[in-house]
Figure 1 (cartoon, one colour):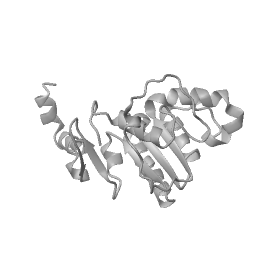
Figure 2: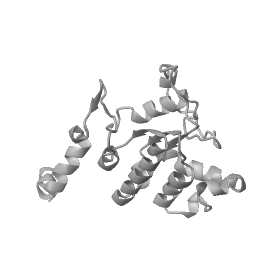
Figure 3: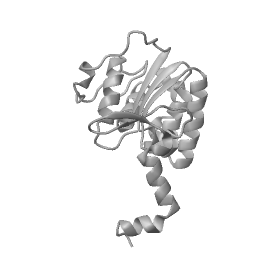
Length: 198
């Protein structure tokens, strides 16, 4: 769990590069780039040698999704079945994300996801938890940067909170996101008054 500006995307990008991904987006079919803007952090970290590589991998960056959808359209005939048989540009935002989760994610994979909730309503985030659980049962592993208390709630997840100065593992109900949402939903009038929104 990360707050904005603490380097979560930079860290996930560095991990992705160390795993062999493109810094924008990567799967077995894609390794394209629109701009070389990644940080040098990937050169400073290393993955443990004992790590057993999964059958396949996928790196999702919500901010690069449009570019991916465009690239898919350009090579459409080769991979039409991998994304639900419909152009991602012709689906709604959440539908295109879910086409990816349902049709392109398989068991025994490593998924590095940067803010997968970006296109998902709370109800769709719950559906994402169900899909994630199916994949975990098939020996998949997820590394996720998220602001969503729904996604953070996944049972037995290791939640790492990052500030500008430290990393620490915390329990779900200790996260700032959980407590902020809980406080707001328990008494929205009080919170709005404190924000001088009346």
